[in-house]
Length: 293
Image (cartoon, rainbow, N blue to C red; front, side):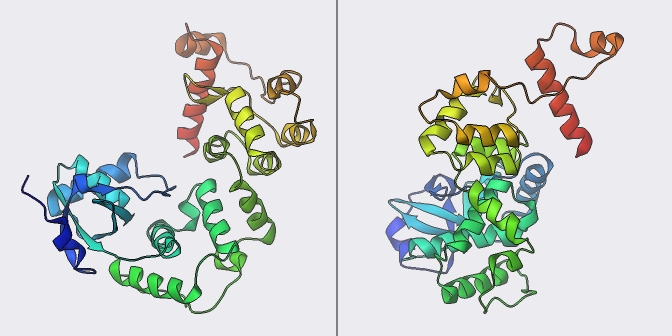
């Protein structure tokens, strides 16, 4: 690869530059899931055929560039075998401004409803705590709309209540704000549907150390699966228990929150012969997710 003049590029903010893929790093606080499956495959094929049509947005980071917008385009470009990605360089951004680029771009590209519960919780928490300057946010949103070739269908120059902005009830906002306080591992339970939002709210009142203890005690680290489903009632009881009492002891004294079903012996032999109960549960869960999707 040819020698790359980093210092020369830094002085040319807002111009589109071709940046080597190995000089790009993800945003340090990027909590949004990258595309997978057909959506990723389509993007890879498009980039192979046409290149990256919309530049990503980055900021200088040590001797590399940190991605603010375009993590999926960068990832797909690597898979497509591209050496360079077109990018707009932003300099001297505050932490709040950089966060606006990351969050608002995900909202514009995906929409609030497509995000996982933990991602929605992060966005609502940021809004609720009012960490952004409204004027800066308006300017950045308008810039993102122009970059994406879209026209804003709503005005962003007025302060809106969090619930009204995302068409959510006050109670839903309150619950999602609590989800943002969960230990990361337990957030993954909520995102995967292994833990209800309401149960997650109850667990969010536990200390971070207690939540981490719960996650480690109730996760099969070979498969990454939750060992025992926790109902809202059990979560409420966990919240009330003494913090000195081991989580394992509490969970072992609770009846299983799972339900039993009967399967015809012929069906069992055809699909589950030789599997243990955890393997069977995994197959059933994956099949149900595919069916309901």
